[in-house]
Image 1 (cartoon, rainbow, N blue to C red):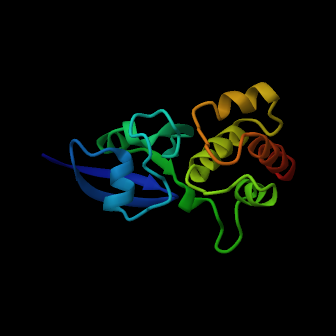
Image 2: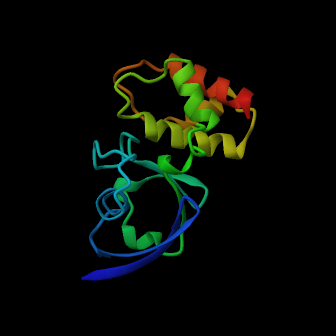
Length: 154
């Protein structure tokens, strides 16, 4: 059964249909061709698919696309302003917090949501904000450095 989804993604109104069983991640990647959010675990454990949904970071692989009806969603594609990267994106580059890059969009979205809530996060705030994200390449020190740098730039 197909459902109609009317939502706002990256500030733009979107109206499209999807099967009732379609995840938000599949809707973003396959229906809307927004490939920035990544499919990894498909169980909501790794955070590679993180998007901001009504102001909160969520795992889009375990959220149904139909639940996005009426929602405000921000994806990694919505952060840069033309060629100018968002401060969180730039901080990840500047600190070397990316290696393979697969988990990076999810981390960036989790960090953006954190910095939207608090401009001066504590270490505990940072640890909690990225506790749902896993990286197998960088280790976590550079990611934490990127979060501190981004907070200082905002």
